[in-house]
Image (tube, rainbow, N blue to C red):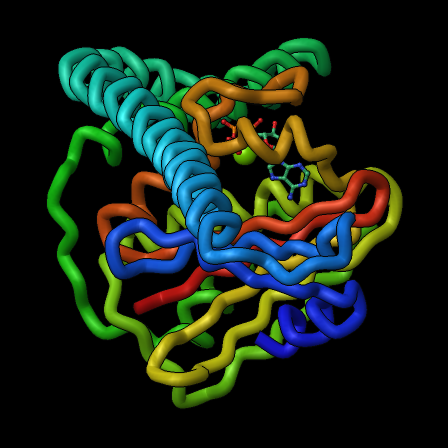
Length: 290
Ligand SMILES: Nc1ncnc2c1ncn2[C@@H]1O[C@H](COP(=O)(O)OP(=O)(O)OP(=O)(O)O)[C@@H](O)[C@H]1O
Ligand SMILES: [Mg+2]
């Protein structure tokens, strides 16, 4: 309101006409001194009121269009996710069985590797890491097919610590955490772990040389805010707009599932997530846990 007042004083406004829709003001029209220096007549005011009402309608339409577009994008995203979830549910289970056999054989071959040569060892390690990757993709897809959220009380500091312990170590990245000891949240434990893993993984992958990943949490006004910030490559606005779309990736070996799973978990909990990023500087995600 102060801003509006200053604007009116600064620009020597003579007449202010509210742009109303029903009882709601969506903006206002400001007019300067009349060219002929006369005061505004009731007819003038009447005419400008009609104009202001039309402008109000145009503003409302634009806002509505924007909102509709957002809803439509969300619906398309959810539809894609639901479809992927269905496919995953159908094939994931069947793929898991042969994958388990491959895994078992890999372990077995690994055990007898001393009888083999160096090349054999190299291929075995490729095989096991690829099996692990495939398993991870299947688990995330299967997560999508599970609609329900089973909320329990989670100790944030301990949970994040255990996620970090299990993470592949990145020597060039310093991971800092700042999470108060007595902070608990209500969440589906497995889903929350996956959400954090995906965010932290993206943060680590974004750092090309040396860098820092910070994980902070605080409670403010009945909400818990969890922040994951990295000093990585960052994103331009266009990339940022697409990151939550299923199968959107800019990485050579990426699938583009991480962020859409994050969005799905956020939606299922009724939370919010915000991203801020600057190309070349880094990225920050803030989760608002309700
Ligand atoms: N912290 C980040 N810094 C920079 N870019 C990011 C960050 N997080 C996400 N992105 C961008 O968003 C895209 C989508 O992320 P998402 O996690 O969905 O897929 P991915 O990491 O490419 O593959 P996947 O997670 O399936 O292995 C990434 O390819 C990357 O371009
Ligand atoms: Mg990812």
